[in-house]
Image (tube, rainbow, N blue to C red):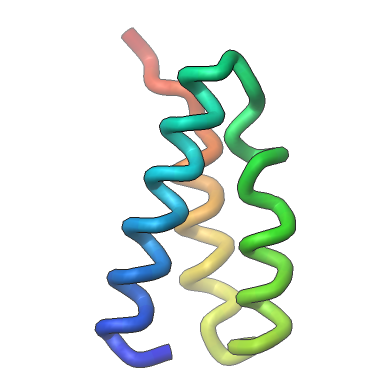
Length: 62
């Protein structure tokens, strides 16, 4: 992925994760298909994708 593609993907994934939390859903479940498809298209970015998914899937600690 280019830097621009990564930024766009991160923004979209963040929006999906926040929307899932707002609905009371698990963001990790909501993001699963999106991240799996991206890993298949860009296997060279698997580490970055997994790291982003891990960060977005966590519930904030208050």
